[in-house]
Image (cartoon, rainbow, N blue to C red):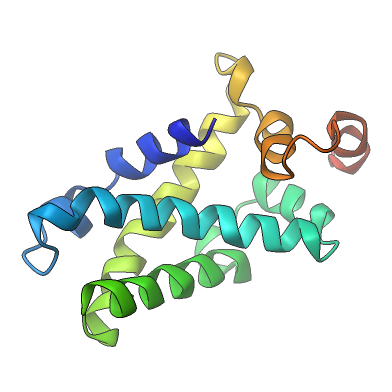
Length: 145
C-alpha cells in the first residue's frame, strides 16, 4: 500500500527532485521517502485528532491548492528538506510546493479509480490506522454522495 504512495511520489519527482541540482543524487531516494512519509504523517495526524470526516472530504472535493491539508504536507516536507539535506528554507519550500500538490492530486485520482480495487480510500486509510479497524462502514457513512 505505501509502496504505491512511494511510486506516486517518484513518478511526480522529475523536476522537483530528480533533475534538481540542489538534491544530491545519493539523496534522491531518501528525499522521495521523506515526501511519502510527510503525507502519511499528516494523514495519520488528521485521523488521530478526530478529523476523519475532513480527510474524506479532502479526497472527494480536492481544492488542492487551497487545502490546509496540502499546506501541512508542504510545510512538513520542506522542514525535512531543510533539516536533513541542508537545503535553504526558501528552496526547500519551492521544492515542496513543486512536488506535493501534483502528488496529492495523483493520490486522490488513484484512490478513486475503479481499476484500483486494492488501492481505495478505505484500504489506504485502514492501513494508515495500522489495520486497527476496518473503516469501510464509517467511511461509507462519511462519503458525501
